[in-house]
Image (tube, rainbow, N blue to C red; front, top):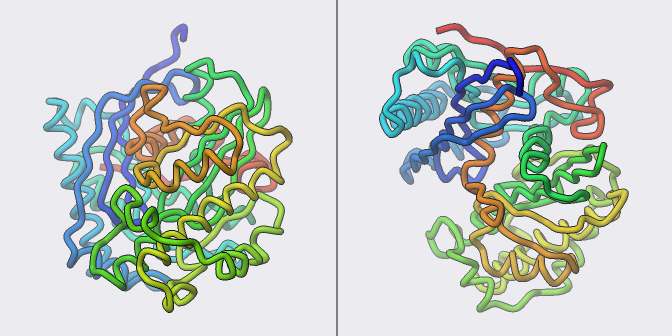
Amino acid sequence: MGNTKVYRAIGLMSGTSLDGVDAALLETDGHEFVHPAGFVSLLYTSEERVAIRANFGKERKDPAAEKIVTDRHIEAVQALLAQQKIAAGDVEVIGFHGQTVYHNPAQRITVQIGDAARLAKETGIQTVADFRIADVKAGGQGAPLLPLYHAARIRGDNIEPPVAVLNIGGVANVTWIGTDKIIAFDTGPGNALIDDCVQQKTGATYDPEGALATAGTIDKKILERLLADQYFKVRPPKSLDRDHWTCDVVKKLSVEDGAATLAAFTVEAVKKALDFFPERPRQWLVCGGGRHNAFLLDYLGIVLAAPVNKVEKLGWNGDAVEAEGFAYLAVRSLLGETLSLPETTGVPGPMTGGKLFTK
């Protein structure tokens, strides 16, 4: 590491699954040195979830929803500082993703809600936000943004390439890491479609450990129809809006059969990603909430014909990876370093990003 400065940063993430706000403390030089140092997660209430969800698909920001998102993120920062027994002055920067409500890179539009200026002021920590906007304006997909963090972690653990890091959040995305190349893109649906359909039919917010899917039967005709979507024929880089598919596709099925069919859809969409890799990965490492769904993980192991493990196998915290990643990107933004590549988001050339909000 030599004389390279190590920064202490907080990363914040609120994903499209709408579980809540994740906050991670990371020590990093913005390059190869990465040391996760703490993590907290605050859940949204059901009322907050409904209020935020009502903004999905809308370009105009709703002040009430934005206030909810910002308030919860401020609470998460304060909770993390208290947990680690450190002061705001001990942290150099926050990486604030915000809450994506609309993502349409074809029209060069991506909308995240959350007031970064207020977050910086009320926490007393300078904040980098608007990570996706410059990328999309330059013609990139604006997603996925964490491949460089995935690669830093994999290199730090001396994992033999090629390896694939699969994040199953609301949308699923993959980072393929070779010896000297990275490829990344959204593979297809993650948890969001399953969660929405389970909630519509039962009121529950998700399928615990894939129990409903395990009890159900996959409707192969519906699955075939879903997999015929043109998205899967498009070469990466490519990205998806959370609501690209809706629950209408399984509305005539029981909740168990619907969960099984949609979980199979998530997995078969991941399998299609293999068509775009230069080589098959030696192993798949899974992070995000979807790794808790036993049906998904078992099915992945069958169709990918390679070892599939939760990132905990490497000692990572699979719930914290995205938040850690935005702490890493915040430091890289401060340094003027690359955040996205032509091979990860489709930008014309390597580019930095993020906007700095002072405290």
